[in-house]
Image: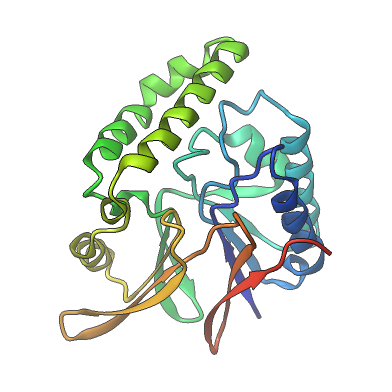
Length: 242
């Protein structure tokens, strides 16, 4: 049995190499998994389930085909696609999970999340996150005309790119004290997340206990997959192109 985890694909029509790698993964590898977890930022942006672009429909079809083969698919929202709703999830055959969720990974209670809530030193982003995750604000946004939401989404992406270029790298990474606090709060010794685009397996101490934090990689220059079996977890890459 193998459980697969992916995150930070940032799928968009402007990067067909990423999309091709994703579809190849879905067709050739994912069907042999016992479960697939997508830990956020599957798409570069998401302004509502009613947009229905060709890419969004193709991705939903790929997930549904996998689910029809008996592979359960679980999704946690990222900071780019936190507006994905029940309509898309149903069409994709995936189950939406809360932003912090504990699973039994081969007998090890494991906390899974996107990871942006761990980056508490980036105070500007955390203030922004609090605003856009407000349920009333999301309700209002969904009721704007599609064209208006598309313009707002484009402006937000442009602003995010500019901010990343001027922010110190350290504040965009996780806060080590926050990692320990959250893991202790959920009573786990293993954490899996994405968001930071810094794939690695970190060993740490939780008091007298040894613990592990696994960071998923992004798909900007290659595919990135975390493969877990009863023997342990391995970070793997997938080359673009056939």
